[in-house]
Structure formats: structure tokens, C-alpha cells
Image (tube, rainbow, N blue to C red):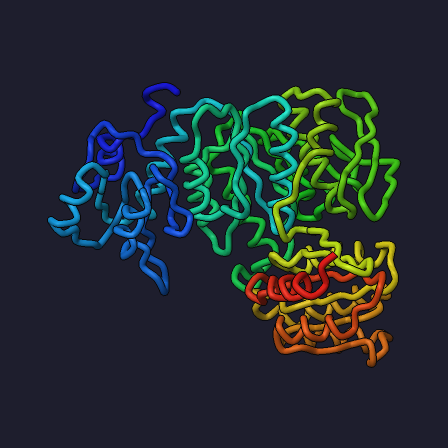
Length: 470
């Protein structure tokens, strides 16, 4: 590693305008951690003040567990602690989140490497995972872990930069300005926009406003950066057509003519195959997970891989080998040939619709949809939950278990459109839904779990796994 790529106590003090409490000025700061439960020896603990918990209060615990140093705010360090941990580096700053972001921005500036940033209403994490897998065929890639896609997670990711020669990060948002802050830290060279849907529409007010918020990603890019768009998404398609003279735009899609378009699609439960032109030659791609949304994700990865001159053979290998982050179409086989499709990390209409379609086409006995509330929809909540009910009825799902207050709109619409009332159940919460499922499950059933993260559907997975182990 080059010397200027390291962050030392001395440089951190300058970057963050911090106050030195203890430690060696030449000590390198790396492996930043915000959770004492995950602290490893040599880590740098960062105290984060949240709405209910102040992580700064646990800095001494982090030191006891082996942290090499701490970044804290609003905490007085006693002379006893200074003496006890005089060989550890303790820096006090005005705001630890702001300091974390400044350190990450500095770290990013030391690397002249490709940085691919992925955003969109749905599909961010799985697209990020697939792009990283393809890029890894040529580069040593640093990628966002799990869903570390916010104002804390993205800086923590970039601070892990060492001998990497490419980065793939995910950028999420709820409000205007959030992606602007992230992109100005990450300075992407490539921006991938997966979808403009209805997630957070209750906060931002319209899909057009969601598009504006997502397009903030361009503010951190140089003029020679590349934009990769899902050309099947109506708003992205229109924007791309209007702006193609001003930006370097690469498109992908299934329905609309695109730079990378899937054709001759063969859909199966456990995956898909399709043809796509790479360097003007047809190539057959195998996607190891079913559903058209994963075909689109793979097309995004093909677009990125081709941009960086990764061979078609290696692109294919990267797509076949990619691993999904948990709770994104996670296949959980249980006893009695029961399969749980756990897609419960989050939910919006745009992600629920393809998940229901996947369930409908899955080989198995009965198709059971356990659907919980979709949150942050504001005035659109009733309309969008009813649209989910339409998808349940249209796809002829056998059994519907609706969880939460808003899910009542799903069940009412499904019943209105012909789903037998006796096949519809309402549950107050995930625990009740788990009990209901355990009573009705039969050999060969296929079960979809889909809801916003706050609905705690992980409870259903845990209870089913305990009682119905394969």
C-alpha cells in the first residue's frame, strides 16, 4: 500500500479537525467498526449517536475488547482511562458521522480506480452483488457488505480500501440530498440505475421526484463517467432518450431495444438462460436464480463487464458464480419438500410484483404468499397494497396470509377479484403468521415471504427453521 493511502492518527486529526486524547501519531487507523459486538482486535471503534442509543458510551468497552483506538464525540475521557489505554489512539471530534465521511472521502481520493455505484428503487443489492462478481473476474474488488448503503455504511465500506483496484458500492436513500452526500464521497466513475418505482413515494411525493433524488448520483461523477440504465423502466427510458447527447449512456433491457438486450429467454424455477450480443457476437447467459428481475440484474452486470473489457467467458462465469445477499430471494428448503422463498429484507410494489410472479411459476404443490405491509407509501398506501392484491389474484396464488394493518387492502382486493375467502387469512404480526403457517403447511408447498423490513419476517424464518428442519 502506498504511504499516502494510509490514514494515521496525525492525518486523521487534520482531516477531521479532531482533538488528540492519546496514542501514537504515526499509528495507522484501519478496520473501522461501529458495533462493540463485532469488534476485532486492532479495530478502530467509532461511537455513533443514534436516536435511542449513544455508541460513544461504549468506547471503553471497545478498548477492553481489543480495539486499537476510538473516534468519539461528546465524551470526557478520565485520566485513569488515558493512563490505562495510553498505547491506544483516542480522538475526539465534533461529530463522528461527519468525521467518518471525511475520512472516507480522503481515502477515496487516494485511489485512481473504477468505482461503480448502484442505485434504484429496487434491485440495488442483488445488482451490486452480480456486478461485483463479474468485476472480480478481472479486478480485486471491494464491494458494499450486505446493505451498507447509507451515510454510515458507504463510508465504512470505502475505509476498507487497501490493495483493491475496483469498487462496487450501493447507494440508498429516503429523502432528497442523501445520494448527493454519498456520491460526493464515493466519486463514482460509473453509475448504474436499476429502476424508478414507488419505494419511499410517501416521503418524496411522486415517481418523478424519486427519479430526481436518484439522479443526484451524477453530481459526484466526472464528465467522462458512464451511466448505465434499465431501459425497460419508463422514467429511465425517457430520461435516457432526452439526455443521450449530454451523457455517455449505456442501456440494458428485455422489452425495449437496448445496447444489451436479452432475447431467446428460457425461464425455469431455478434460473434462466438468454442470449445477448456482446461485442456484436451472440452469447448465451445462464442466470442461477429465476425471475425476470434477475435477468435485468445480469444485463446490468454484462453492461459493466463489457465497459471494462472483461471477456464474455469471464462475464458468464461471474454471473453463474454470484452469491445473493441474504433475504433477497433466498431459497430455504425445509422438510417435506417445503420451499420457503425468503425475500423479506424490504418491499415495494415494484419488488413484490415479480416475487409473486416467481412464486406463481415455481414448481410445487400449493403456492402460499405471506405478504406484509409495505411502508413509507404515504397517501399511496391503499392504492399500492390493492395493486398487490390484484397481482395475487391474477397469478392465482393458492393461499394468502396478509400481515399487518395495510395488508388488509391486499386481501380485500384479492377476494374482490375472485380469490376464495377461505384461502385468505389476516395476521396481526409475524409471530401469528408463523403459527398459522406451521398449522397449514403440507408436503410440496412453496412459500413466499415478502414485507418491509420493519415487519420482522425474520421471525417467521426462524420459527419455521426450528420446527421444520430439512
